[in-house]
Length: 276
Image (cartoon, rainbow, N blue to C red):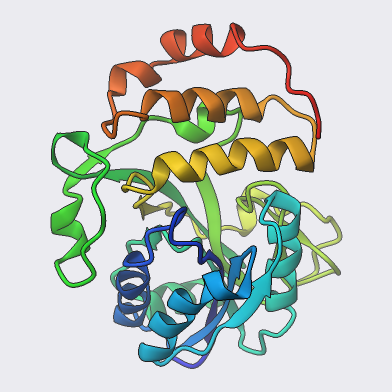
């Protein structure tokens, strides 16, 4: 399929990201028809990007290397740079742990063009290993068999966000700065005068996006995000992320720990973040 390009900013530090997920990610999206990839791999040193680069090159994908601190604003800036290089009609944007579940991508594109829909969105569905353990990813066994449990602990809602995100849209639209879930228009597109993309411009069906976040590196990744929020901007997310990290420190997810009342009580006990 030559009319769509997948863009992704991918963490490459193997202490924080399970690099065995990369093979599943590329194979999944090739399986639904995507042939063009623009990927940037990130770590704080070039040496830490080498394993991810080698995996991608072995899969026939040549990534860009981005060395620097990874936080929300810098990630969005890098993502926008990738998007500006897209020359296909459609752009696909997902994180490396997000697998959109689509049976017929070309049919969706055809319907969007016919009914003048310029974006497609989905709902994130968490996937867990048996007994909700934070297991490492095997690069060869089916990812769906490794993480067979579908659930949703409403993580994004707990930090004041949403578990829905736009993942495919007409080239020329860009992701929002925080979380990369919403869309805005840089310049008028398809007779739209507003920068905000309303519901009437989305494909009416919301697809499931399997979220393979809860792996063996999740605890270290959450801890790293606490520090990044302190450097990035002042908000309350650091408290929620801190409690999430505490909840999974023992390598198992207990869904009861993420119930709104229990979770919120823990968050309210934490002191305000001091910005670095």
